Length: 277
Ligand SMILES: [Zn+2]
Image (cartoon, rainbow, N blue to C red; front, side):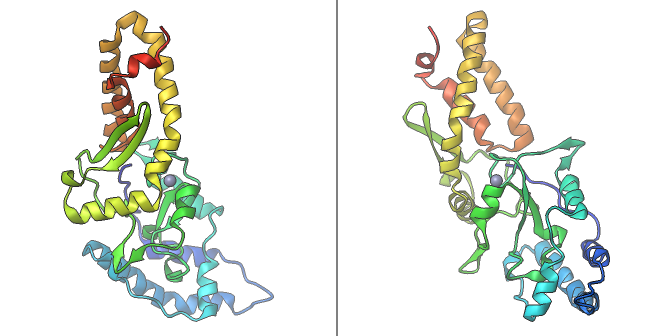
């Protein structure tokens, strides 16, 4: 997983544009004026959101007290399949002219939704705040659900603002090679970051999901090894896997599970037993 750049334009303008796009409703003629009336409050909320992020105290974001009608109106601004939200998706997942299609909350599945970093049910004012929308896969989005805080501490990374360190902390062990067991190396990272990391990985079931997806990585390695090793030998093959793993980690972060798994698989003493002889 890797950090992605947060929206660089004015978030409140994005909200106002969503309001502007709403059509007059004959069966609810006051709908648009209710949204307009809320705008000054939303502006202040957005300013507070931005301030708390910049101070690193995002978990202190105050609970809102909108009426049920106001909440319903604010939630109506968000629909994943509308053009502005899809355009936002494209903007946020294009990095250096390269489109990222894989969810960075897990690095497993394709992006197919926006996670509301603070849940929109609890904070309807941020239902279309681009700072609060993180592109992610359906699995991460559903697994995370409305959770974000427990005992005043965040449960998940905010990959716009929690800068991932250039340190390898994802460990792989084999109790029964080649089936991998993933864990976090507590000694590699500061304790508060370890707490958040462990929470993110366990609450999204990442260790289990990596394990369940590992057969694809192993099958493709074995297939390429069977084709290439007869020509260059196993040691040269290991070097090419290491090189491509390093390139992937430069792109997808130091703890990109697939890259680390590839190196762990080919360097294991049991690797040759997986090959066609
Ligand atoms: Zn995901």
